[in-house]
Length: 228
Length: 229
Image (cartoon, rainbow over all chains, first blue to last red; front, side):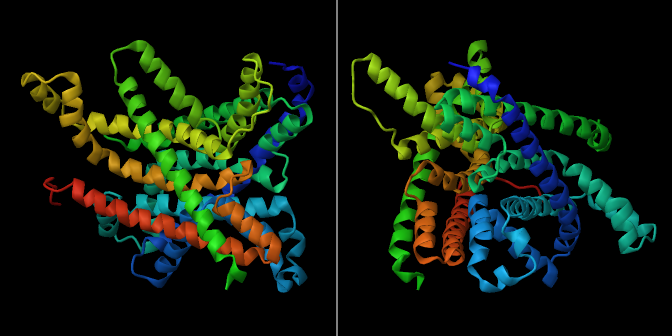
């Protein structure tokens, strides 16, 4: 094992870790904020909106994220209309396409997680809200969403960790994230063990911090709801 | 349609399916061993299984695959050189892919199987013990068949994630569905059409798997009483 080259390239790894972190935060934040309204619409079962959202989540959860990334980054460029459109500067950038793919992907999974959590709410909570004469919107804001979002925390923490691992795909479309840094170090010095193990350690630490963060969130928001 | 690339895509789909099934077989063996280790009385086995599941679940599959593929290359050649073998040995991407994916999903299945073993009432095992069965007989005749029903939902989820994970073997040069799609996209300059076709084939795989697992779930739950709400 020869870790001299790794120490020399530590700045590269650190900037890669920062890129990974940015990708993760952007995709999780945007994905979650799109998923909440979609999950509410999705849980009105029988409506056309619910069916449409089901198709979206089914397709995005049924295909690999790598295929989605290639479809958006390489695929869209096939059309003259896309290349001539004002959105082209964005759609031709690897960074934007990676973010777009990650947001669409995590939004699909999160929508299903929150919709499932809304569906499995204790019916007493909804009946109580109705008996107090709350309108649908008030009931949603005061009762359904706070309760459903708290109950979705354990499943969402898994999704966040999967997303962290998913951001490694960005390195395939030339983004210098943590995996990209490791691949560059490997191809420059031909030190596969050292290069990839260093990246793995970084990812592992990031996963541990995510787990700790969600543990705290669960203790704060979910524990008080649980029977003692 | 698809400029005559359809046979190539179908061939690639076969490779993808074969990688996925081989990895699943390996993952199920590792998962069973891991679950038994986690539930064993032996502290060392519990520690080992804990380290395995924690480490694997903390690192992206792509990084592990690159580590196994490029690292394995170096390791195999160093060992071969030490044994007096002069030729350069290439690692087979199929083998590297199956080993990596099997190893990763073994960790996820360990958790699924552990929960399933715990869901079998302890009285079942004790009854087997009372009949004078050996530990192996209890496992084969009593614990395993009952545990499998509880493990099915976890198994089905992990299989769906696994088959999608196989797309990354294209990065280490295996000629799977993804690689075939890339080749066709490069040749015809119609990337959208071909990546869409690849996506449709993956969607077909996951949809059929879901139907199959629904059927299995029904079969394995025959005779199970359900509470009425």
